[in-house]
Image 1: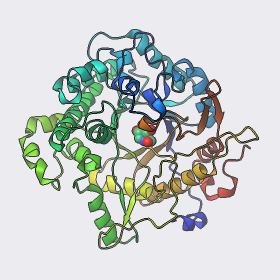
Image 2: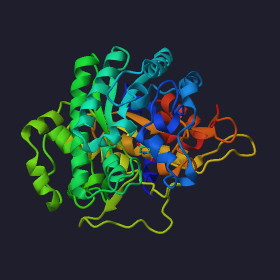
Image 3: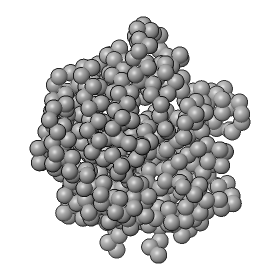
Image 4: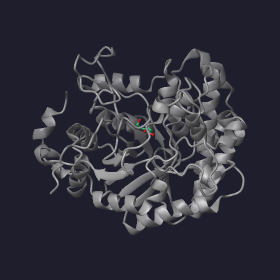
Length: 467
Ligand code: NOJ
């Protein structure tokens, strides 16, 4: 494992205005799936259909955050985060996707935002974290151009309602996963399995939706920063030389067979105004058929790029993938622990797109449990957090403008097709016992990191103690 040298490096804190956050999404924590005028989303429907989710679990109740906003915000305050990233459950606000506004749904988010502001926590709103209204799906979902227009309407409604209170927005969360998992292999809602050309059409509508939403926010939401939460493969050089970095950076963005899971398929059109030049030949005709007008709709000025980064690969000087050796550390979901991805990921994204960077998600899944002493000890997560943040600091030291970090996740939650077994939270949710919240050791570690603005990262022995 890399990282040892970090422990002895001098103790330089993060930039003064660095944003220390935590993230969640609506379906994964809210529950209240059919309350107060909310209609179903594709995820409600997908989970209610047997065979899709581990143990047949659903987000019907999830962490019941819908009814526990003040308790949860009080925990955020205790944690000391300066920003909280959450998403809007689209059919809570527009049950039909594009019809009348459900004001009770809007009020829920308005209350949450007020609680956050009172606690001095800046809201960061993701407009779409996969909660597509079922009604829109039944009219064709992301294959119907109406959906992109309806998304612009959602942005308008939300932007107007929270004007002056919300200053940071993300349009889409991981359009890569919507395309690859929702419409590619069908592992995510809506569970469609389609061919690559159909997936390219889905990706294109998502891109248009993003572009329209940026424009809608700019015209309704007041002074706001707008970005998108992208994900994808990050390729790191095993040995850090200028040449190896260039090879790794190229590999990070070159679109081959795995194009749906690449940052560049989405970020190139959004930021550079064209689809990637290195792409699978089978998509050439599609890309060439896209009109300049549509590309102009998609490519709207952004204030930052946000990236969800959990893992990465390493290559040698010849560009060959280096397999992880036997016994390499892995998370509960079997993702390889690769701190370097939080150094090279932001560095490469900045190199290609020249925009400030937020890490909008990063964290480790564990099979956490309550120990006999009644507490939840999670040293693996603390070690992960520390190693990744030290790597992020390397990027900042090199001059990459990283503005903030959002830990995934604030609390344990519904991990999509994997259900509830794999836990990502800084706060344990006791599903068997009235959804009681128990801050884990990592909660206290992150609290110390935030309070010292990263200064205590060099003091690994003490992280997580409940001082
Ligand atoms: C990506 C997604 O945005 C989030 O919803 C998910 O729970 C985490 N990463 C972990 O898989």
